[in-house]
Each structure stands twice: as structure tokens, then as C-alpha cells.
Length: 545
Length: 38
Image 1: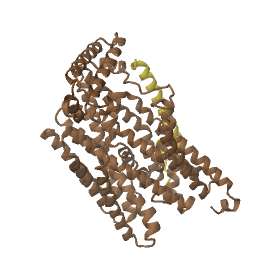
Image 2: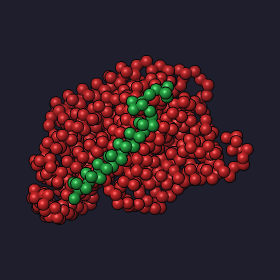
Image 3: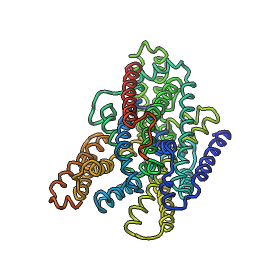
Image 4: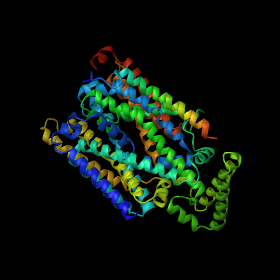
């Protein structure tokens, strides 16, 4: 990074924190600290919801995924608008009207304290696992690409986020998210325009290359139960994943609980329903354009610099590299003939992939394991000064907006659903405000510590989604029982969640079912088992609950 | 406050607009894939 980039990066970070702290001043009651005194306008919540969902992994890994696998990943978001309509119409109004601080508090009112405790614990485990990954993912990649020590990057990002989250509570988190989302959009647009502009061929020719390589496939109608993203798995699997994430995950529910009215909360959700897929399309399209760029500019055998060093020092590298060079040149020549000689280009692409795999195999490296490094390598090596700083600021913003919401929601559940419910019941408001600040600091430190141990190969975004999918089926199932099944009892809900989680872990460990289906199938088990147990209860027990 | 009127006049219309956008996007993605992905 050059001085101009540093200036942009530092100015953005200082600006974000200062603005957030200014807007969050005066959070001196638990209601203001945890729910911003229910005063937020729809546009602040809308961008906060979007910024929370878009993590640094989204930027770093999703672009790489489009480079390596094409745009079909976008189908995972097709269920999101449907989920937003369901949440806006039925779920958000109930949360708002009941005046709860957390989604799980609602479960005690509907069922009993055991259901609330079980679901709160599931949330704390699941989010607790994810928050470390959210912090470590950008730190890991920045270490490899920029040479910044991982501990320092993690600590710097962690301390900044925890600092403003502890100080200002959710009002600061929401307003920093708001600015962070604007910076992310600017960074994203800059990356997209640069990727198109730096390609040596015309836009039409670039589209031909990306298309011939199978990278422009946002709609896949073939259904495959065991693997891959398609329209059906995206609509159904994505619907359940989004229902769980936006409807039952406190890190999102808390965003729209801060709304100054139900209408404002609904609008923020519907904004996301419409804006999310186009934004994801832009991110993936950027990845496809980066692919075109590297069709005409030779890429390294692997984008992971550590693995590249191991490959270069292995025996047989010179011969493998020679074949790789020839294969790349052949693909480049074939690309220049498009759209006519599509068959030749496909053959050249296959030869190039094989040469790459063989070279990578010399050091025991999988050729596709560098997805997370592609985008940043491209940005830091080829983009103009200032833009690199802006994209770095966007990645930091994406990481910070996700972590702040997660830390904030973990602290809220710890205080409202555990501490206030079981440890210290009837204390004054100031006591719980202090507890919330301490809990925020605790989860922040926990995130920094666990981030040091969370390291992953392969695609990080899939890891995060997979961990989520192990628990989301259970969460959404219990909320469906709560909202839509009047006969469901507390015992039914409890038994249903346990049966659903057992089924999900069985699918994960013993079958090859694609993880996106866990949410829908797990949820069905929860609802079916929960309903059956509720019906089996004597009628007077049902009436009591 | 839920009687606050949404931009399109009623919530039902808002939800309809969202679903319409989704169908339109799927149609656009399908056409995009058919045109470019060879």
C-alpha cells in the first residue's frame, strides 16, 4: 500500500468511529444502550442489516468464488426476499408489539423459561463460534497478502470495534454500520469498474470470455440434491436460511427492534429484500471480471503466497511451470478467437486447469484452495493508488460491521436472557447497563482470543454458512411453532428442537446432503416432532401452556 | 404505529412488489445465463 492508500484507509476508519460515537452519545439506559430507545429510522436499520450480513468474507471470498466457480453462488440469496416478506408481515410486528429485547425473550412468553434458555444457549454457541471466524478471516488474508502480522491486525480491528461498541451500544453500532455500508458500496463499485476498465479487451469480448469459461451462470435450473447451488435449492434452502438468520438470530433481530415504529422496521426489511441480490450480483460479477483480467495477464500458479513458495521449491517445478506457461498462452490465444472457437477455448481452459493442478500437487496443495486470496492479490497488485485504500477500508468496514453486531447481540442475550433472568433478577437499570457494557467487552475479548485459533483453508464463506446451518433449522423450527402453531406446547417445542438438532447432526455426519438443505429439513423435523409431542400431551396441560 | 402508510399505499402492495422483483430477477438471470454462459 502506498501513502495515498494509507491516507484513505485511516481517514475512513477514524471517520466511521467518530461519526458512530457522536450519534450514539447519551446511551445511558439499558433501553437506549440495547435498543437505541426504539428511535431508529428505516434507512439506518436497512443499511445496518445489510452491513451486518456483508462480512469481510463476503468481499474477499465471494469474488474468489465467482473467479473459480462462476456466479451460481448468487442463487443462495434467492430465498431472501421471500423470507423478508414473511418476517415483515408476521414476525417483526409480533416482536415489536411484545416489547421484547431479544427474540428469545418472546419464547418464554409463548412457551416457558426452558425453551428460552435452550434457544439462547444455542444462539450463544453458534454466534460465539462465528464471531472468531468473522474477525480472523480478514486478518488471515491480510497477513498473507500484505505481510501484516495476524495478531496485530486482529487486535487492531478487535480493539476498535469493541471500543465503540462498548462505548455507544446499539445506536453507535447502527450508525457506524450505516457509514460502513456506504464505504462498502463505494469500494465495491470502484473494484467493479477497475476490473472492467483494466481488461485489455472490450466489455463485449470480456463477457464472451467469462461466458465461455462458464463463469456467467447466475441461474442453474438443473436440480442436484447432493451438491451445488441451483434455483430450487436457492429458493427453498435460501428461504429457510434467511428466515432463521433474519427472523431468529438476535444479531439481526436486534437491528429492526430499534425501529421507531413497526412500519419503519418493515421498510428496512423490504429494502433488503430488493437490494440484496443486485448487490451480491455486483460482487460476483466483479469476480468474473477478475477472471477475464487473468485470462490476458498471467496469474501465479496459486494466489496463496505461502503455498506458491512451497510449490516453487519442490522438485519438478521447472517442468510443471513450463507446461503451465504454455497452457496459459494457449488459453489466451483461444480467448482472442472468441466467440467463434468456443470448443477450442474450453479445451484450452481444461488444459490450463490441469497444468495448474499438477503444479500445485507438487507441494501437496489443492489448486482450488486459494479462493480467499484471489481478490486481494488482484487489488493490491494492479489497482491504482487511492482505490486500493478505499477497497481496504471497505473490507475493514465489512468486518467491523459484522463483528460489532455479533458482539452487541451476544452481550444482549447474555445479559437479558441469562444474567437478568437467572443470576441477578431485580436490580436497578443502571446495574444492567453496566452489566451490558461488561458483557460487550467480554465477548469482544473472546472474539479476539478465538480469532487466533480459527484458521481455515478452502472457502471461508462456506465454513461460516455451514456452521450456521447446523443450528438454524432448530431455531426457525421453534419460532414457527411459536408463531404459527397455536396448539404447540412448551414440552413440544423443547422436544422438537432437540429432535431437529439430532436430525441435523445426523445429516451432517452421516449423509452427503448439501448443507443448504439442513435448514429446511431440520426445521421440518422440529415442527413435526414438536406438533406430535404437543398433541400427545393431555388437554389440560395444553391449556395451561 | 403500524397504520403508518407505506410508500405504495398498502403493505400488501409492497409485498407484491417485492415478489414481482424476485420473479423479474430470476427471469433476468435465466436470460443472462442463456445469452452469455456458453
